[in-house]
Image 1 (tube, rainbow, N blue to C red):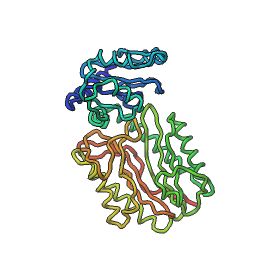
Image 2: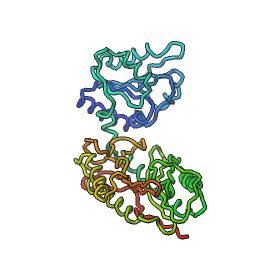
Image 3: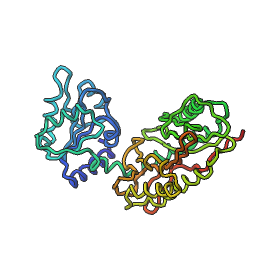
Image 4: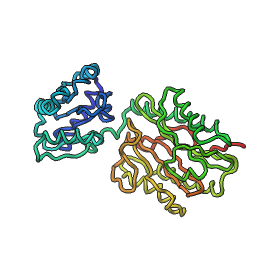
Length: 367
């Protein structure tokens, strides 16, 4: 077992003690990646990492056991297709002292059939929750190594945005610009994850992807992109304008920029997540555009592109040093254009450090 895995299991067990949790059950996915640095192939065969206060074990499909053993020395309780997982699961729970854990935390991304299999194996009085108070709580705070990978990916995304700016021409389609963005990520060994290119009225749809719409003189273009390298993602949104901007663009861009700045000033350790959302939302509402800010101010980012903490109007999450999340207010005017500006930040003791090095000013394409 690696030193990092030992440290993370120790931290998780400390948190389990603090929350009165007798068992944490994790399926193949990002939670398992965080603990172990890998996960077995995810399919319909029940595979669970079971973590009790003193010991841990894998419920492991025999089909995956040999390949997984190369990565971990955790005890396997394997099962074959002709026998099924029930007996192996009972044995695993008994071996780690979790046959009657009292309260358990379930990986919220787990398949429902995995969860029901586990719950059926436990006493009826067992209480359950998802991992937000245990594993999720720990994952929100990034360590030095995670920060370095997020910063590296942010730099790649910066360069992908700059490539997009250099390629914009009237007469090209959104899909053609998106292809240039994807090519840049690939050129740096990153896997493109998403590529929102919303030109003109398409920019008023926050989750528009890209289409065959032809980019024209006077378009404002929302460019929201992300890629992934070495297990971590990027996410950034910047604006471009082709020639003269549409009427009202300058005013709206200034309002959104002020909303970003208000959220950045508010984001500090000890502040509630909803206070950051409120800071951005108040700027936009006070300017008379509140109804056109139609989504949350931000989302956490780590192994997953979207993970806690979520910066919403209802979130009482207390922000802590080391948390990473987006600040991305926007104004979307139906039939006209949209503007969103997005930064990924990590909370330091006295400020919110922005991972990107690109200014938020609109790039003007000369025609």
